[in-house]
Length: 176
Length: 265
Image 1 (cartoon, rainbow over the protein chains, first blue to last red):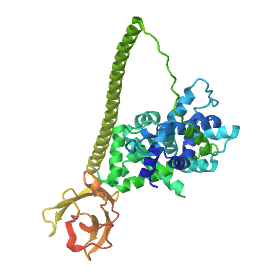
Image 2: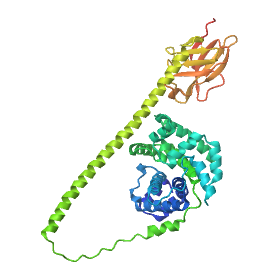
Image 3: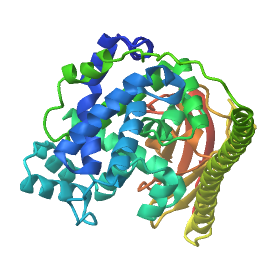
Image 4: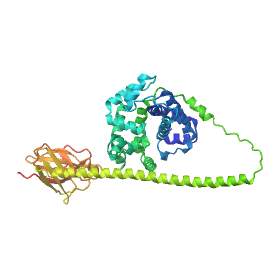
């Protein structure tokens, strides 16, 4: 089933298509959400909520808005950020100034979570520091080009090409 | 912009990230429908991002069965029967006031929505303009750098005259012997046809020995048509030929476009 067919079936609330989407993307979205909320139980709750929402508004998705994955990624980031702003949410990680991955590896040592440490270590070892940061801002946090250029203090016009080079490196790394 | 340049611009990576404007998303979607290689590229990018983000999943995801409890549990709400009442004029005026107020609020909401869209559109345009300025600035910097190089005193200039195949054309080589770099200006040569590239040769005259200095395969993307090539050779002349893509081991002499001798100094 190609993406267009899958999307069409999903829009018509075909449960099989939905299950396929869940198996393709839920790990990834779980990772994105966890990167924002930093708590396994809360991340699970948000993930379920994301797929509930996706199902409820399936008919509002259209390919013109972007990839199914991207659509779900946006819902996930927004839901996770909303969660961190909600009343009951306590940020258990006060030291959020430290680097994203270092912080997450530390969280892992303190709590019972099962992230892919080998992958993260090899990625941190082989990607340039700037790339790691760029990918974090654009994909985990959904920063716009302008926000990225301000955060990293690089010219706006270079965000696109820098990121392209970083993703090319990432693709090589994942293939090996 | 052709498809390769479009892909190389990095816009597809941002498309997958979901950080483009609605308009840009529509443009990318149009490109996907026209060019299968764009879709292919997007799928590869998405694969890498999915893998990358999944590394942070803190364990296995809840089973899909759990999600199903939600999708199956949709029920049509039960409508309750209303008992008949008599309405006084107060009720009617109350309703009338409510309707006036509601339509006023709806109108305000509509206006605010429009204004917000205007602001967003202006913001998107800003980003595009800044990008253009940054590109132009980069071009200007590159040109200035080039002028700086060509003004150095160690540079020898050789004019390459057009040959039988294209008598009107010409080229120039600015050779910095000390740094062993030759800047080849081919703006006076015709654009190479599809599948062909210009190849630059350093020549020794007696006996005639050509040494390839390189091919100009970046011809399309270089605006000023000046290319820097390493030239550690003791060149006595320079020649430019048209060769099949990838270049040739020896020059194809009937495709010799320009030739010029280094004057002895």
